[in-house]
Amino acid sequence: MPTLRPLPALRDNYIWMLADATAGCALVVDPGAAKPVLDALTGAGLRLSTILLTHHHADHIGGVPELARRYPDAAIYAPRDSRIPVATHRVADGDAIHVAPAADFTVIEVHGHTRTHVAYYGEGLLFCGDTLFSLGCGRVFEGTPAEMLASLDRLAELPTTTQICCAHEYTLANGAFALSVEPGNHALQARIRSARDLRARNAPTLPALLADELAANPFLRVDAMGDANIPWPTRFRPPPGRAARFAALRLAKDRFAA
Ligand code: ZN
Ligand code: FE
Image 1: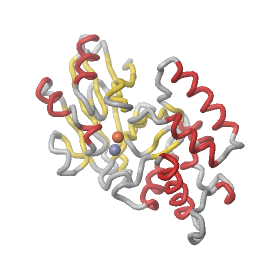
Image 2 (image 1 turned 120 degrees about the horizontal axis):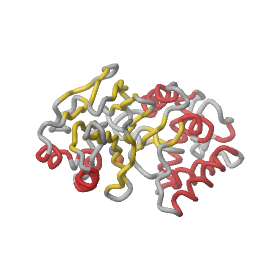
Image 3 (image 1 turned 180 degrees about the vertical axis):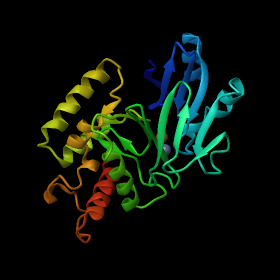
Image 4 (image 1 turned 60 degrees about the vertical axis):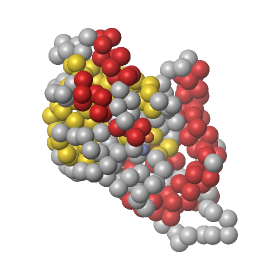
């Protein structure tokens, strides 16, 4: 039975590792650095069998060349994007992949943060890179807010028991914004409380349960929250519609963080 754990890396990244002691190998997702992976592999006496990549940003692929040098047999899955130079398998929407240690994933294209970003869903887990975070979502760098919303809509349709394995520890910062949008949301308040406890012990707040995110994450609640909750830009009311609601939320979050 493989075990899942997030390896802290760089400033606030997690490199997810799925390790199988019996098979003697492990899979990692978005290794932005090689050292945390090499340390975890050495500590457990495992070899690296698979790397899954969600998008081209350096904090997600920076460790790949070094890992590929140390483990030349490792399979490296990535979307088609010349900005991800090292890969052995290129994936696209709907692809079903079987990887070692024995695990099956479906590829879901989730454009918005970047124009080729993918997520991997399988084994009850979702590796979603910088698309969906606990209580938040990724910045829209290369797509439109409507594209990002469509991507989040697809993730929201997964089974509610899905464990969301995001690539960053952003839960508390996201929670502060989420609470400014929906101060009366009890599920959100409870999630922030539990995340605070976890962070106080320096423990990860992830994986997050999709059911909890549907109840607390404002970016998954564009339809659920009231019009009064939407932080419309002052003096500018975009035409009504869910994409406009999402765009207003994302813009407010960008300004909130700044
Ligand atoms: Zn990114
Ligand atoms: Fe990132």
